[in-house]
Length: 573
Image (cartoon, rainbow, N blue to C red):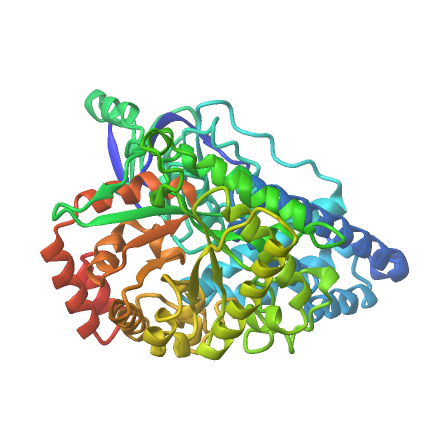
C-alpha cells in the first residue's frame, strides 16, 4: 500500500528505485575489553598512530577528489574531519585510555564518546557535527580492525540509512544511485552539503517510519517537496520517473516582470567550468583560484594559471556571440577571485600562521598586498593575459577599505604596463570587489565608484556581521544569512552600488537556494552564482518570480527581527 513520508529535501531532483539499506553494523560495537594486564601500551599507541595517519591520508585523497569532481567548497568538509582527527583533547584522551590498559579500538571509542554526546544534546547545526565526529571515529575503528568499507548499492537503488556520513556520501556514485533517504539528519550537515552539490535526489530527517521500509520495496524520492513515496501508485511513479528536475536552460532567464538575472557558477578549475556550462550556467561568478594552489608543494606559475583561466573562458565560448561579431559576450563572463588564503583556507607550503593569518588577520587581499605580493603580481599577469581572450573579470577578496582597493588596482595597472612593455598580448579585466566585511558593506558606494561590480560573499559576510566563526559549532547558528542584520548589510551594499552605477551579485551559499532567489532579487541583486548542480533549479525559480511580490518579500524581511520571521515572510521552513 502506498505511503508518503516527509522530511527535508536537498535538491529539486526526483528518483525511483528499489530500497537498499546501507549496512547498519556499528564499528563502535567492540568485543569485551581484554584484561588490562595483557595490553602493551606501547604497541597500542603505535597501532593508533598508524591508523590515524592512514585515515589522514584517506581524508586528503577524498578532499582532492571531491574538489575535482564536486567543488572546492564542498571539499572543505574534509578539513573539519582532519581537525577532529588531530584534536589534542581527543589524542590525549586516547593516550590516557591506552595507558590505563585499554586496547586502541576501545580507547578511540571512549575518547570520542563524550564529544559525540555533547553535540547530540545540542540543537540545529551544532547537533549535526556529531555525525562528523562519528565519521572520524568509525574511520579509525575500521582501520584498527582492518574492516572493509561497506559494499556499494546496486545500480538504480534508493539508498536508505539511519544517517549518512560525508565519507559514505563520497562513496556513492550519483550516476548510479536513484536517490537517498535517511531517518536522521538535517539540511546543513556536511553530508547534506555534499549530496546537494552532487545533485542527488535526497530527503533527510524522514523519521523512524522510514525504518519500516524493507529492502527491495520500490521507493520514490521527490526532493523538491521533501517527500518519500513508499510503494508509489502508478501515477506518482510515472511523475517521478518522467521528471528529471528542472530542465537545463542555456539562455539567460528573466523574471515574470522581465528583469534579467545572471545565474552563474562557482568553480575551482576549468574542468568545473565546463561542467557548469553543461548545467546551463551563464558564466562563472566565482573562480576560486586558491584551489589551483592546493595539493602541491609549490604555487602554480604564471603560465599554468593563464592556461586555467583561458580554458575556463573557452568553456563558455558562445557561437551566437561570434556570429554577431562580438567575441566578448558579457553573459559568458568568468570572474576570477584573486588568491584568498588565511582563515579556514590553508596552503601548507605558504606556512600561514593560524593566528596572524586567521579570520581577523592577514588573509585575502591583506595577504596579497603584504607577504603574498609576488604571488599576487604573477596571478594578475596571468589574468590580464587571459582577459585578452574574452570577458574575464578580476575580483579582490576581503576588501575592507577603499585604500586597499586603490593599492590593488595600482598593482594591476603596473602589471599591465609591464606586459605591454614586454609586447605580451593582454587586456585590462573588468574589476570587482568581494563584500564580506561590514566595513565593505558600509563603504559600498566608495568601493563601487572604483569598480564595475560588487559580489556578496554571504558565507563570510554572515560570520563577520554576527561576529560568529562558522566553523566554531557553539556559535555557527548565529552565522545565518537570514539574520536581519545580514540582510540589511546586503541591502546597504545594493543601494551603495546603485548610487555609482555598479551591479551586485551574490556568490555565497544562499545564492544556490531556490527558495531565496525571490528575496535576493527583491533586494536588487542581479547575479546569483552557485554550485553547478543548483543552476537549473535556481533558473526555474527566477523565471517564476513576480517582481512586485519579490519587492514586498524583501521589505518584510528587512523589517524582521529574527531569522524565523524572515523565513515566515518567505513562507519557508
